[in-house]
Image (cartoon, rainbow, N blue to C red; front, side, top):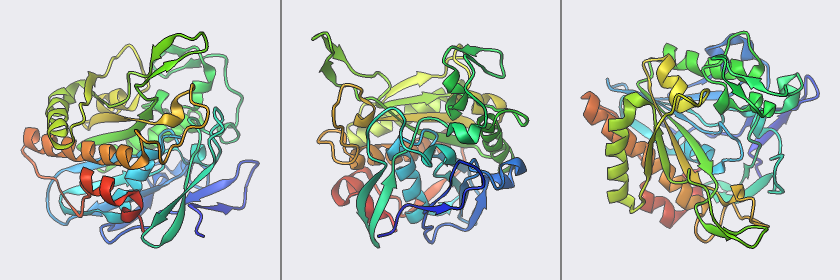
Length: 349
């Protein structure tokens, strides 16, 4: 059995993990995030970057998985991109596990198992389930009482200083998590990325009975596309196309500058890149479920969530191409129905 991670010797108390990503023929170059910001090198914050080049002019896109390492559909969708997709026009850059430190530990807020078994094209693989935040051992300092974002905004929960999606655009001389965000910004600038999509998951929108016996509705973020203000028109077109293709009604929201540190706002504000963020519904994030199944839930299966994520990315790419009069064409791209019918493993090496 091949485990998704190879455990390396620890240089400190925190273990070094390196993802078992098996690049397909579409990958033309492999790099590390530390190639764009050297201080990450030889730390647990460094992570692989995969570049798929068509050799023909067109747009450059960035797909970001694993910002929150318990959001399994996001990094699985990104892994499928690396292992299956080929580019026909333009370039695709993929970071499957943006926060490698967070995927190196178990989710600290649930009892969800560390690894989940699936069958791939080459046999059994284990998909990991990590934590929302950087391992505190990699952060190297205790959590503050409050986190002060580089903008000066205060987040009351100091643990969020280890949340990659609260610290953008990062700081070159900041905490390891802030340096990680800064490194991703440096990659976007160096590679002249035109648009980026950050893959996330939220709690499901179902109704449930709370501890008081009252009926409550679940999370509002599931089936959401959030756009930097300069990408709202592209997002609106993508959501309409998504509904026609899959029957899924995605909600559309514009970044709110009252909430700092999030990728969909800060990447677009700090660079010329137009930034988006998707949210699929993960039953593992429903606090009311006693034993959530993050792979085979009858309503929110991994296939459903990965298919949604990949379809949303493609629709954003197509809409962006129309609005910016430039080409971005992906080959060997599994459709929504392909993944639902054949399963996630059919597109993993």
